[in-house]
Length: 232
Image (spheres, rainbow, N blue to C red):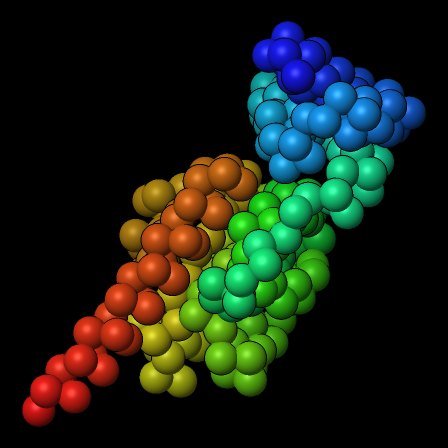
């Protein structure tokens, strides 16, 4: 498979999402499989890049909500073809993440991309979906023994729901034991600092990278504590 083949497939998938063309997205997905382009790469460099382009146009008011919805449908058409063919990590789960869109928001495009990437990377993802009440994040983190809560929101009015989760973790004595990461169109590094979240991901790729770092840190800390207990 040549580099030009990969780039052609990526370009087609990106264009399909930009145009909101489900048929073209499905065609691009099938072409990726036929040309042996890794499905994970096709999602990241094709579909996800297309949604990033659409998001940028939305912010510049070149696109509007109906355009976003059409693009999302196109992205899902491609995901439905590519996702089943992503090789799963055969080893045991690398960690457990509670994932959801905070209460008051139903925009889940970015969340769904993050879920695909995390699952493909060998993590166990408990997807709570959209419009998730604060107590559900806390209860699931407890019952599942999750290391990370990952929250997203696209809208400014629902930013406070992220702060509610952080405050609830503190009240439950879980702050620091369960790490958090936030992301979405209205989220920023400044907001992360203000509410005391552990990390901020500006896009799906960065979110997955930072979740890996958070979990690696938790595991390393736990192993260090075990060694100290054993030597005492």
